[in-house]
Length: 254
Length: 263
Image (cartoon, rainbow over all chains, first blue to last red; front, side, top):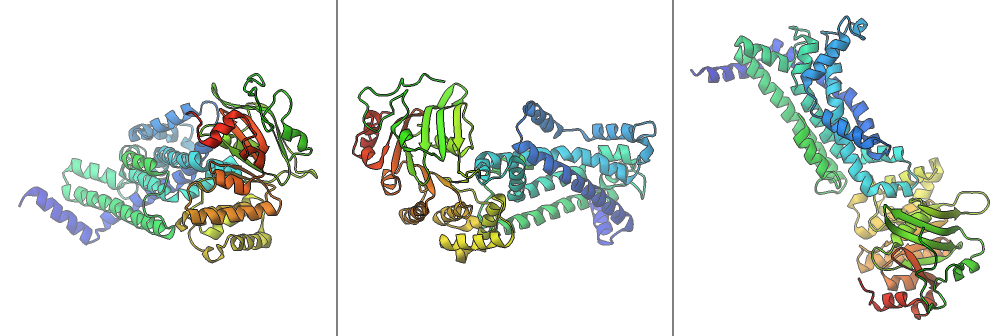
């Protein structure tokens, strides 16, 4: 039998049997990326909403920097976090290097710009259209920012999906700061890289399929939520004012 | 700031600006709610408003008319305080040391993706209303505009006319001293337009000061007592309704009334 077909069959068998080694890796991946996204959302959503409504000297420069950080190479993030957390680094006393905690930090740093930049775009678009009306009701800038963030929650869901996609699919940062230790810091992407180099293609493929499956399920859930919200709020299509931002999210994410 | 009086027409009528003297209405409005003195507003080199002297008395119903780009909407925003003037003074006084309360109705009201009731409660919360008082005020406001039965519906699922009525309820609930209207019925069908106008007339009867920018001269006749004509950011005529429509105003305003204003 063709080795590729054989590998695919073995991969699906591993998934069907709920192989404990596979499950452990998947669970750690989802845990690390989920926690990183949660932390990044707390920081990125607030920063994005604030940047959308704030006007200050140098704002344009900050936005250029933020948009540049969207393409931040994960290995660079890994390297910087490695230097910070290494025993001789300023945060060495935390003892986090080669732990899932270090991986969460690295992915958070990687994902914050994604959340902040895309949220800024979605909220600013609405702010430019509707900010004046909110101010006429007595809302200050920050209150308006938060209200619009809530109002653009359908776009924000897409932002969070893009952020999770970026986190769960990156390999460079978690490899450097996690060390890919079997049973401790091995996640889907680092396991795929390792198993491929070892020639154990079935496990690598199985992990690849699970990774795709996780992203597909998330996409489907978010699509359903968006459709439900649109129906609840009596809107047929995409939310007004966010279309451009959402298009960008789809191209920038992951 | 541009020099005063350069645009005052030579054969100015009774309701016409006669700079540098204060406008006729300024003398009649002894204790204004809002007063603008030599106000100008620039966007870069472009003057959106120039040499604006205006006094608004309590309970007045003033319509701002003029061609597109004449500065009507900008003037409303300056009167509200949403846009700070580049030059000149804006004074507001509600009397009794309390702040003047404004509400504004836009051509397309912005309603959050919330229910009708939640949108109203949010506006009340922003206006400082809390608890039972806010709940009661919300109920009354929805009743007043005939949307009590729609309280739980998503605000964005309402028709255009209903959305504007909700925006009116939001404005009314805040008990404004001054209600500013920026083409409030421009995007509505005749029936919805009539409903909104009727509500506006009721507001006015209660003593709320109405300041409206409108292209609809029929609506101006129905709702306003005083008409201010703007051209290129300047007030060229400021007259009582009858005087304005009798044509006893600046030639530019007469041309506007005849629909012969050059582009």
